[in-house]
Amino acid sequence: MSQAARLVLADGSVFHGQAFGAAATRGGEVVFNTAHSGYQEIITDPSYCGQIVCMTAVQQGNYGVNDEDDESDRPLIEGFAIRELSPVASNYRSRRTLDAWLKACGIPGISGVNTRELTLRLRVEGAINGVISTRDESDETLLEMARGLPSMAGLDLVRRVATGKTVAWERGFEGDLAPAAPPRPIDRHVVAIDCGMKRNILRNLVHIGCRVTVVPPTTPAEAIREMKPDGVFLSNGPGDPQPVTYVQETIRDLSRDTPIFGICLGHQLLALALGAETYKLRFGHHGCNHPVRNMRTGRVEITSQNHGFAVSPQSMARVGLELTHQNLYDQTVEGFRHRELPLFAVQYHPEAAPGPHDAAYLFGEFREMMGGDELRVASSE
Image (cartoon, rainbow, N blue to C red; front, side):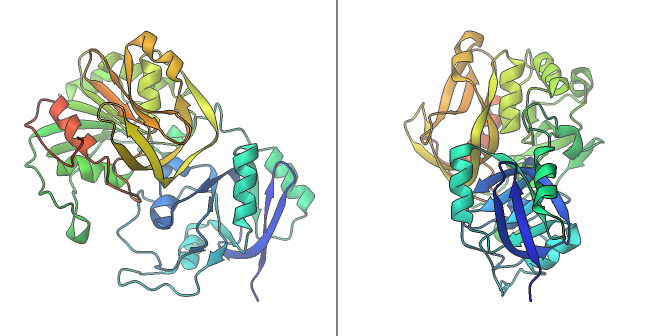
């Protein structure tokens, strides 16, 4: 018989289910993700640090876990809430079950949850702190723990997930994962500021012909200039961008003379560095089916997203930023470009993992911005 587990929210709601993964009590901000596959990439995405992820798709774990699809060195989520855990892990790449993997990583999971009810509650009330527990603790104790957790607003989680040393990244795509377009010869140097970098971003940079140097988020602008990069990349990452002032200061300095491309948290940090403002969304965007309009072409792109904060559109015009992409669900800012300087960013994930590749052309635009030869990664017209 399965061990019982509970998910207790800070508003007093209690969701009962069956435990899987590690026997533990963990707490964090509870968010929902609408992807139908890609749980391994989601669980290892550093942007989910400090969060309990609820999957809206009914069954999880049916294709197991492999050795190739991790987006970071280790999972950083606090817990995993699902409707049904597949009894079978069937895929030629599978090496272990989702249950065994989470157990080895020390992450608790809860299945049998009414994920529809939980998702509707989060959609109406907004993301809320909660605690997953497989242990024999009272609901009152778990509720007190949930209410004692810090708010994601004002929380700097970048230092917790980022690299502490400068490293070279040389691996591109391999085997079945490779894009149809062949890789470019390495003839550009990009310094990537790691705020919680996903590996598929690095693979895309190598694929367009970049030698990539990954640096800690505390690396000063002068040290980056000494590396003589053709461009600087700002990565995704967890938490609130506002307290990450050390990266903002570096970007502000580099923006005067260096092409810069930002994704997700990097999008927000670039906006803040240039004088725009950010705010917390009610329940964030988490999934790989979000429609975004390219304002320059009118084309709608289906995108992969994972963020709980956004850039204020009212603050952009006064600092020379032009809206380039807009979310069709809630009209939030999904991308901008500086009107004069070689700076641009998007809020979503063009590298996918998981998700569609509609926006892969943005890596090609970054190369062109650095002065590379014309490159067509995917049509943006």
